[in-house]
Image (cartoon, rainbow, N blue to C red; front, side, top):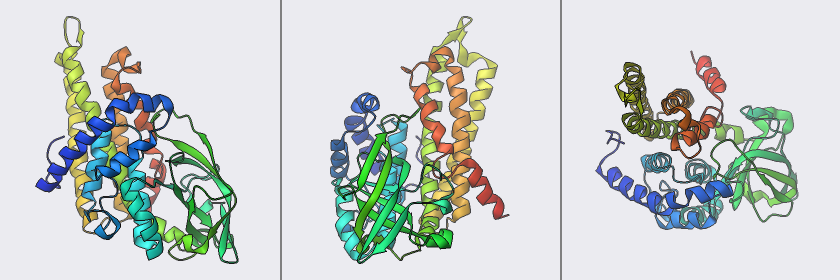
Length: 378
């Protein structure tokens, strides 16, 4: 990927080290992880040692106090190099900020340093079997009993679900108040009544552990509450722009990789005695994709610049996810088409981009929900 104005020399140096880490510690194991449906737990410790977990955390918690651009570099390099399916973005870009921004000092000191080292892997449990993008309809409950919360319910499609050491649970502490009765509560994986369900089989992202989670009278101390009771929905709304920007950036890196490997393939693949790159239709389609990708980078970098200044709002986050993920879908589909029958073969990388990218338009809020959010602002 070309150097971009949003990054400075320090970021370019960091990118080189991140790329080397993924190439050495992830790419050689990617096929095995894909077959196993999960990344080896040891990888998380190596990622911690390499300094690529939670770089944005303050030094007092083990981070380097970097701004969000370091997280973006990690996401871009992991996706561009197809470096395994560990949900590093969930751990570093989503879970850690909730603890840092809203957690007590006790919570921060207990969890954040171990998230940096990889000793603890974090997950967040929003989605339920009957509740996807509509977080207001969450049915999992957390009822006070003395100095504890008793949690009951189930979650599904939880990234890092098998590997996680703790999970932030989105639960109703006052069901009568709807969204205003939602809270965020930490549940450690060794709590009685917490159970991991099966590692879900997906059409793509096979090495990423995605799980069902069950909570049967799980008791946690009230100290595990993140922020204030019944303020969870507000916290979710504040943090979602970064989550959606992350998805947009990941979409850009995936689209760029699909384009690059296709650009090489069409120069080697021949039809009617000449490389298919020489056909006008091929050149025109490649020109269209190249332009869309360049527009995408410019837009997502603009969103990133706004975000590090604290200026990216919910609508901006929604637009970055919507446009970039939809564009990725168009690009990957066309790139696979240029591979012909080979594009449908699992041994060709483009096929994995096709299946891996499809969920980008679903998780973090579907494209339809993004349009609704944007439309309400008009």
